[in-house]
Length: 68
Image (tube, rainbow, N blue to C red; front, side, top):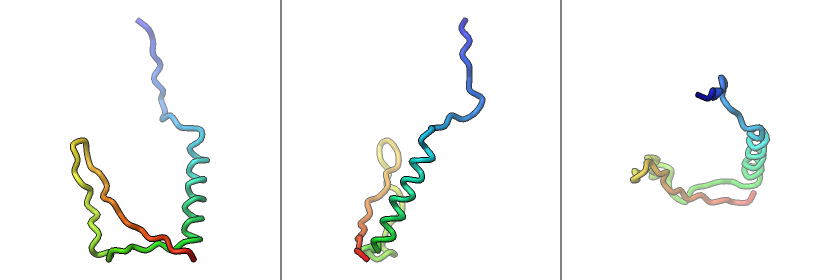
C-alpha cells in the first residue's frame, strides 16, 4: 500500500494576486473613462437566474458605454 500525502492547507495559485490586481486596474480604467447606463429601466431588469439542464444560467444584460 502506498502512502499518499494529503495537503493540510488550501492550495493557492501563485499568480492569483497579480491577476486580481490586473482585473482591478482594468475595471477601474473602464469606469474612469466611461459612464455606464442601461437602455432598459432598472426596475424592469429581471435579476433571477434562468434554470438550465445543468444548473443556473445568468440572464443577459444590455449596457451602454458612454465616453466621458
